[in-house]
Length: 366
Image 1 (tube, rainbow, N blue to C red):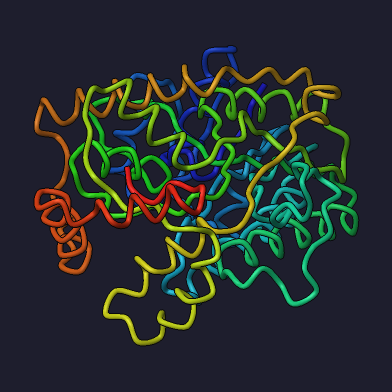
Image 2: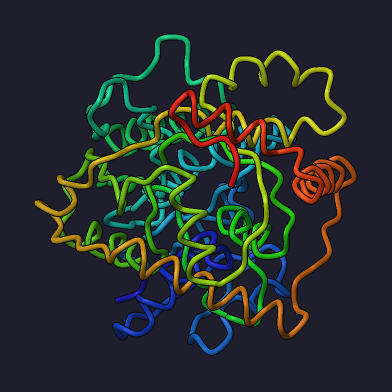
């Protein structure tokens, strides 16, 4: 079967393309910069020059395909206009182009962020109510809008559209010689001693290979007009980092912030010299716990354990560090904060903070 994958040089998209190629499909991939095809090294694909915001180019790329996997996205908060175009507008353009090219079904890669954070003591699912005023994050609001627009276009044009909503994706890059993308960098930063703080809220850790398999399952078993959460285990960030430290044997001091810090971070963001750093901290604060029961039940989705995923992620990053393949990516404010935490730890200045956490019954320092 001929299939086309947008965003195939990205973290999720490369694994989806490789999965499809291994299954014997004729895989076409859209690219803007052919140098990024390194991410698909060793995978038999046919590259097609196309921008996901160019409807005509997408239609040419989709000609003759039965399935389209629209995995392209921009995991960022800046620049807002670009984040919105790629995440909110491009999914609709992809569905419209696919319909005109005679494609049968489109699998749209959304995000659990498009479902909104959990609102009670239980994990959220696909029917989680969306906040009336939006999530307050440009990325999650854009993913939500893109998902809705894709469904609307599919219904209007008579095309089957299924959305998959990956949780926090870790694991190793398809080309292990290449450094990681946005979601895995928290592990890299910790291992290199460049992570000053985390927010001790919940996240949901899932392996990129399981997410790729979930895409393929959704293509064959997913119901049109439905979304499927592709998650793994719900863990607090302090637990995630503790496991990374245990697996790697590397320990660095860092501050553990309570989730309530999010509102203060939001007020400070407009005055910050590095607002992206504060946005990342604020994005960690909501309760991002999810259930993948629907995907398990309807698709046969079976994610691996978080420990296995973290072991794979740590092992890959240690290889990159040992081979000196990690880019510098120095940020003055980020490095200053990390240095301050290290200095405070060295001189015992974090002890009072640790004691305060013990009294409050919560972790404040790692």
